[in-house]
Structure formats: C-alpha cells, structure tokens
Image (tube, rainbow, N blue to C red; front, side):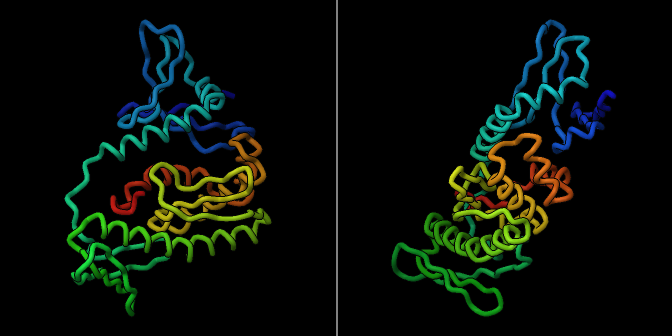
Length: 260
C-alpha cells in the first residue's frame, strides 16, 4: 500500500507511513519539482529545512525510502544548518533577565543583582527561588558565565536524577553522565556508555526531556538510528512521533545566554 502524501499550502510535504515496518517519527520536508532535473537531490538549509528536489513525474511515495537510506547524512546536515541558524540569528542587546523559568522542573527564579568590585560574578541562591548576582554585573560576559555555571549545576541536580530514574525503570544502564552546554545537540551517547546532556534541556517541558533521555539510553543498546533502535525507543516511550515533532521547535525556548 502506498504512503499517503499530505501537502500544506506553503509547500511542506508530510508523508505518514501505513506499513507496520515503518515506526520511525514522521518525516517533514519540502518537495520541489525540477522540470529539467533527472535525479532526486536533497538540500538542507537553515531557513527552509530539508528540501527534496525531484524530476517531473517522480512518485512522492518513494521519498521516505530514500530519506531512510540517507538519514545519517540528513541528521548531520540538519545539525549544521541549526548551528548556522543560531549563529546568524541576531541577538538582542544584553540585559540581565529578571527571571528564569525552567519548564523541566516547573520552577521560576527571580533575578536581582548587586554591583561590587572585581571582574567575576557569583550567584547566591536565596529563599523562595531567588538568585542574587554579585560582582561586575555590568559585564555581559561575566553575567553569562555565572548564569551558565548555575544552569549546569541545576542540570547535574535535576537531569542526572531524572536520567537515573528512567535508567532504572527501563533497565538501560549507562556508565557515566556529563552535563554541559551545547549549541547543536540536546544530548549524545558514546560507545563507552557515557551520556552527555545539554543543560538547556531544563528549559523544555518534562515530557520532552523524558523523550530525549530515553532516546539516549536506547543508544546504549543500539548506537544507530536503525529500525531496531526506533522499535526500542517505542517500547519505552509511547508517543515518539509527537516528541520528535515538538523537539524541532524547542530551541526557541532557550535564551541566548544559556547557549554554550
């Protein structure tokens, strides 16, 4: 049975597989017909995403199979495009935030500051989710570094605990875990069993964070994105398609100061 193809007014093509073998998240791309083209070409740009250029008369239902074969290249290209998009996106003039909302822990922190001598900025946690920044608060670099250190500390406290809970529930055991700030990946898993978590996951909703952690834990068994891998993810996280779709837009929830 052929895969149904849905086309949106802006040219976005959604192909949803009906075959039970295809359990991967729904693929989103734009399809463009080239009157002079003879072969199918894939293009990834930071402003349009994945674009599939096909010759006239090409059957769109064949595209998911092609994308499956090229999935490793597509992932690398999307990561590069996302990194480029963030680097080109204009950053607003620095201003110390008045509050920080961490969706993953459902907490909001009020920010106040006190200027003192010295080039360094330190953060003191006061009562009732109140952070006090002390030091050279006129220095955007010093403030961002201090907030970054605080965010990583929060990640070690909350993300590592959540990873451990999911690991215990699924039986997928990791060797070690790192928390840092990254610009292009939410998390990663090494062949040695080390899971690296992006501290900016704290800005995401809990259910999306749970998906990312489950995704990386499944890499301990399948260090790839094969059908077996997605089957394993689906075993431990029911709504994979929804989570993947949500994750594509989540960078918008991360403030510029939090990016490493």
